[in-house]
Each structure stands twice: as C-alpha cells, then as structure tokens.
Length: 114
Length: 115
Image 1 (cartoon, each protein chain N blue to C red):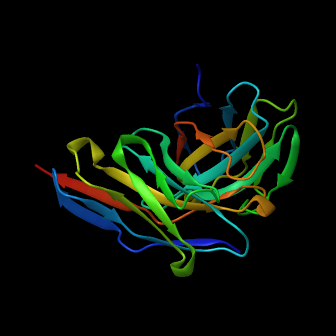
Image 2: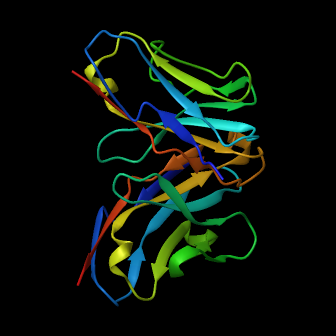
C-alpha cells in the first residue's frame, strides 16, 4: 500500500526567503511522486513529478524537489518565495501497479508575508 | 485547448436526495479518475476508468456511490440517498494514457453540500 505524510500542515515565510515543504512517502513498488498546488477556488495544478529518472526534479515557477530513496522523502523547495506562492500544496504518490491512482498527503498551507 | 470540465460546480441537496455529477475529460484521454476532497483534507481516490471499463472502484465509500463512463468519454458519479457526510468537493481527473507516472489533469470540482 502507498501513503504520504506531509510533515507541516502550515508554513509561513516572508517574501523573498526560501520555502521548504517536507514530504515522506511509503510505497511497496517503484513509485512516481508528484507535487500539486491548489490555489483558492482553482483546480489542482501539477508543479513537478518524479518517475525514476533524475532524482533532482525541476518544476514550474522555480520549484524543485529531490527524491531520496534512502530517506523515503520528496521535499519541495523554492529559493525565493513570491506572494503568488500562497496556496495549498499536496505531495502525491502513485504506483503503476495500482492503476496509477493518486494517494495525496494531507496538504501544507503556505502563507507568504510581505 | 479545453481542460477537464465538471458540472454543476455547486450542488445543494437535502439529505436523502439523489445527485448526479458530470465530468467531461480532455478529449481523447483514456484514463479517468474520481476523487473526494473533504474540507481541510487532501483528495481521496474513489474510482478509475480506462476507456469505458471501470477497473478500480475500491475507494467508493458505500454502495450508495455509483460511477459510469458508458462510451469511454463523459463520466457520471451518482450518489443515492445522500447523507451529510457526503458533503465534499468531488474532483475528476483524466490522463491521456495509462503509463507509469502519467500526469492527471484535474477539473475544478463539484462542491456538494448535503443539508
């Protein structure tokens, strides 16, 4: 079975400072990992994904994540937060053997202070 | 191009009523998923179609929930005899293949409120 734990339910950062969102996963097989962002009253948007190629994955809007198998982690980072980054972020795991259904973490709400 | 669309966007039902939620996936997408997102939580898997075949319905919470995709495109999620605990946002997603790590494109969701 697959599962995801997002270690922080809320993160508050100042504009221009780094952002770190922590995620640990559990998977029986070789997983695919994703980060999705959900802005208020908008649909889920894919930020980036890992599917067994390079362990450092770059996504949209300056976000990147590193897959660490030994630590079963897939933390999301951004060097400099922007006001528009305020949103809910979800770490997600899927297994092809399980039909690619997505298992979401509980989410991390990011607040960006001016 | 057009993304995944869902209708209605908002639905209010009295307890015990039946509701039907519609999903129009991106044209040509093979895979279609339904998820349920309760307030303040991450989405949870309900069911999965590959073309018209429902390959996984393990996430449907009870036999009051039923989904179909008869022609392999539009899908409908039906909830019979709605209960207050059914109140949530119902999300539909589609992907163009069924390969490892394929991106799922999400619709805006239908917010269901059961009074």
